[in-house]
Length: 446
Image 1: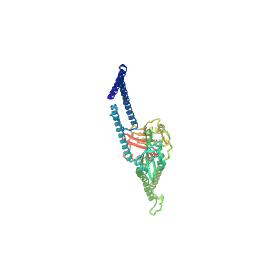
Image 2: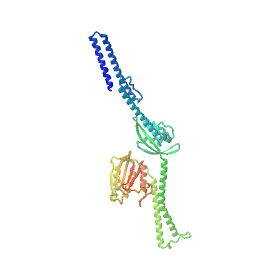
Image 3: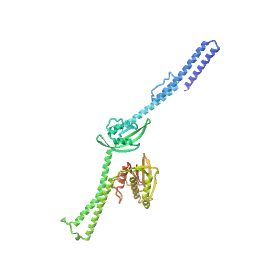
Image 4: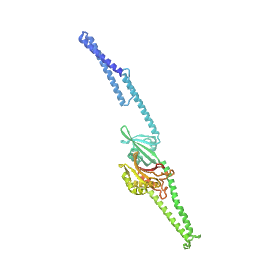
């Protein structure tokens, strides 16, 4: 700005000299005509100075207006302005804005290309107007529509899906079954809230997991069938063998009933033992069937506000004496303000199952300890039951939630399976991690 300042100062000096000279000649000499010319030139110089300042102000104003209107294509001449350095600054700033605009447009097109070619169906809508502002190709293929302008269009396809999308909170995920043009879909729907231009929008991703569920269902059935076959064989084969032996003992070659009074005492004892064994194995098979019925009938959860600390203290009061007798130390680190929406009885039963399992796993552990802790991750409350036992063998990790699978001699094999089903009935999950060094941790995720 040095050159510009010098020009202004020079013009002011010229104006002052012309004005002073004109007034001096007019008042002190008879050359009044010359004084008039000098004063006229002084006025012209003042006018040019004002024009120059106004031109600079106008260019600055136009530049700021262009910035407001996001128009960075304007140019500023250096030939007809005294503010060459200001114009140069204008041009540099304009070029920088143009570069930023190009980068923004490039990033936008890149993001748009990524979204459009993503295999995950994506949709963005305005939460106030329900207007759909973005819908990629995968979403159009999912809903079998070339274009959807408003979220209410989904209501015509499936009312329940429409209501689910509206009620989903940011970070929340739900599973829903829907039929679109006679095709059954199992959709995993995830919502994220975003703010664009001071307006709230919701990004919804859809994932059809029917194929994965079908594959998982087949694997689950295969595991269940293996366990069922194993349990039934354990009862049916001894029953079949013993009934055949008993039949040979009490029926002769002609198929007629023998006179049991003629049997020796040893044979009578074997007969009694055989009948008692058949009765015991039959009762075991009945209990197995009853357990299966219990597993298949999961009650509907009764949701209520549950204080986690109160839940933990109730469970501790119930199991504390048994743990003390077993020499197991129970510690807890629970946020006293933490609350969940859940079925109190179900959650308490899950916690009891997990603590009992942990106690049994600590039988041969020095300084056995069970820790109850809580934390929040991704808007989800997690209750952790951790023991310092030997851990779960790697080959058993994939089987522990399979119904009737157990590594305990006296176990029924339905405790963990029931616990996981209870958690899923409450829209949560039950997971596990284990290692010989760190013990076993069960995570109740709400």
